[in-house]
Image 1: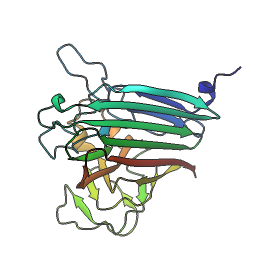
Image 2: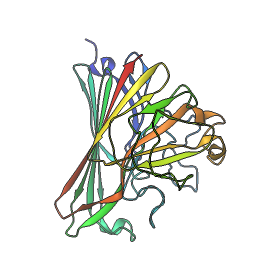
Image 3: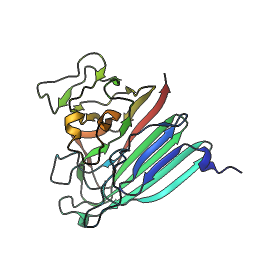
Image 4: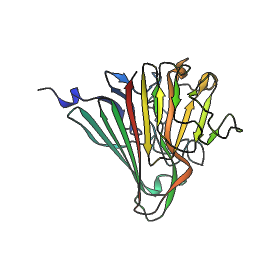
Length: 273
């Protein structure tokens, strides 16, 4: 008898950060970029670091917008793997993490995070749940940070964002996304969109249809040629091999009262040209 795991879509993942590192869908298409220089096992005297690529989870702080480490506390935490199963050509993962008030003095709250990942032939679904398990309300920013693999970012494009309000790190005068397709150059790109409509990413040879719920903004990022030089875990030239289209909550932090749960979803569908 053939093992169900052998016939289901493949997923590579690690308990550090509950990070999905790679997914192979639709005739072995690799959905995510993963740097060969990533170091997931800490060197002596250093802390564990998330891999450069795949899908990091960002919580309870997006980027450096606060007093916590960049992108929060959970990327370097070891989550519990509760499920890794396959049936009828589908694969499911589920990780869980409990955060306690004493874990970090700068974020003294109790929360339970759950990340569920479902994959089948041409589709991948991420479900992030955040529950307030304490007796005080808290707010948070963050989301998912997928590194989507592309043949060459300089020939890739995205549709579905035209006309949206934006905050651009490198062009503070820009207020909305210009008409037409979004394209990239050799320059660093970091743009936060004011909404989260469906987006189609032309990855070269196939497209990825991206949609989200719960999350209310897209962040689109690529370090560009100059920015990549500052990333020690990124090989020279590899900045051209990915673009991050991230479903997040940033401008409007999520407020959770005791007992409340947030649920954010990301759907990824592979479409052949």
